[in-house]
Image (tube, rainbow, N blue to C red):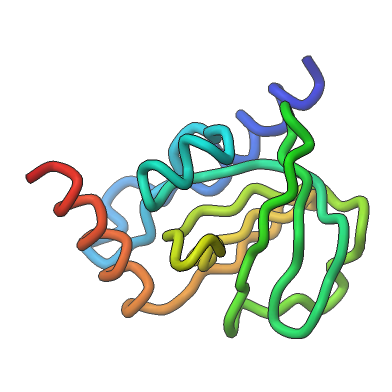
Length: 129
């Protein structure tokens, strides 16, 4: 129950303010399972950081504890530590979630630039076709 409340709160805090303009980063969707994430090719997943390496990390998904590889790119991992809860939104490439937004346990949000937003929008458009 606590995890559900925290995830919901984090999603609410990540929502852009009304009238934020067309380039505002959309709020992440409801977290999905690793299987749903892989099948869709994009989405949001919540879990706990298990390891950090280079410009990425591995998280254990909340409901299944299944490991998910996350490439954080230039989002910055300063201060991120194993055991920290995160919610990640992005696209899946070759089995790795390429993060476009990371919401950390303290509520801080790291968001990728416009290029990452365009990639996610393209993936969503392809799914609709």
